[in-house]
Image 1: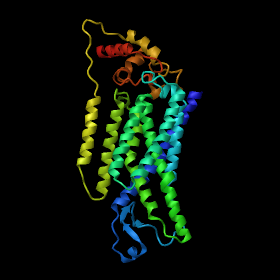
Image 2: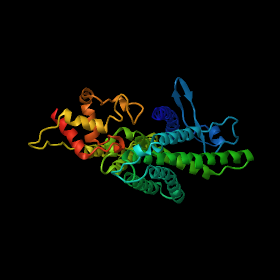
Image 3: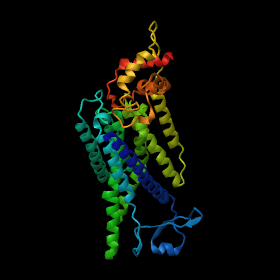
Image 4: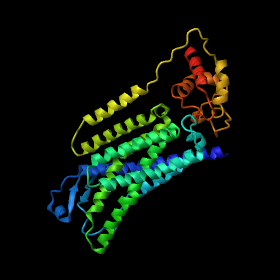
Length: 392
């Protein structure tokens, strides 16, 4: 029953996280596009009001004319919308989800004895420390480099993220390492909203209510953090979906795989940001595609050659392995799960034969299963499965 309730919690939290995440990312992408697409107003009346840029757009049968003030309007409107709960609800639902999937099941999802002999409690502490420590380091770098080169900031922060990825892949399971790199970046993004963007906007509103001139530095800081969030979005999204693609996080140099994919994601986002400003720089997506293609070639599995003179294992030979290592989850009545993941059942010879390709991919090519190697499958057993599959 506990496993069943955890599955339901995971389902509902993942669904909620996806919904609110779409809302946050959508508004983030829209406002960056809007900022990059604004044109100086030609109407003297708009200039006199302090409007620094405007845009005409058509959508859904209606015409829109967004306007952006250089600092703030002369008079504060009665109805002012704040974009904050999209971020807060995304982080809160994400933290609840990672707690349900990883922290409550750290022994299965976070600990990999072949990587590091740590306890589930230590793994959880590492995960939580990564979230908090990642924000602190990022915030310090922003404070030090806000008036200096943003390119320098980007290089230094990227090096920090890569270092974290390297450390986590030497402490946690590959799946947990990738998720926590993404969660660290996502925590930083939400921290920007909570600690800088919204407080800065509140100070601007408070100054206007007092009749004072708002400090333009609040807008400068908020815009800097907002642009950082824009560039971090694609890396976070990859980390969030990476748990479905074990060939990335199970590689011997998984940290380098993640580093290269993050770099490609940033280059793609940079292309679109420049394009919104009217500058089409194809070298950025071309470089990103080349990086991703290189990673794909690098990760491609090498063909396995059968040993001469050795009889190939039969289904009868590998069925005991499947029973010992796989059916705790993949059975009609599993003992480690509420239900068989992905509906894959391996508790009869016929079902094993029907899932041969998936068994080979997950246990031999990717070594993603058993999850966290909780049932202790050996390399020799994996090789026996490989021989059986090749001889079919």
